Length: 124
Image 1 (cartoon, rainbow, N blue to C red):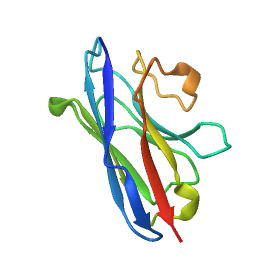
Image 2: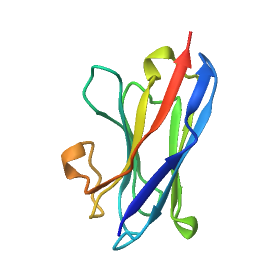
Image 3: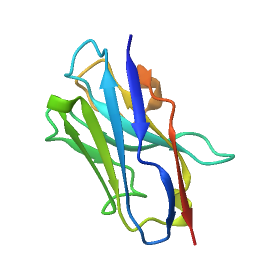
């Protein structure tokens, strides 16, 4: 049984930082692309960042480039999202997701497994 469990969300002031973690278990293989998505109230879920299985290749939404960093520790089956210079518009539920292949993608349709999400709220 695949489980993705996010943690690290919370309330932070604008300009602050948070680090999200996603602990994965039961994945068929650790050669999975891992991604972070987010959904703000009244909006569709959107891509935030993705990382290849080796960690060497990353991809970011334009809205978070230069502020967010995705990384992974395969030995701990954990993916991280370091979020700096947070803005009120970053407020959303953040979801961890895993693809069943090694190919990078920004489309949520291409991700096979999802976590339950963790709330991030940025106050102005």
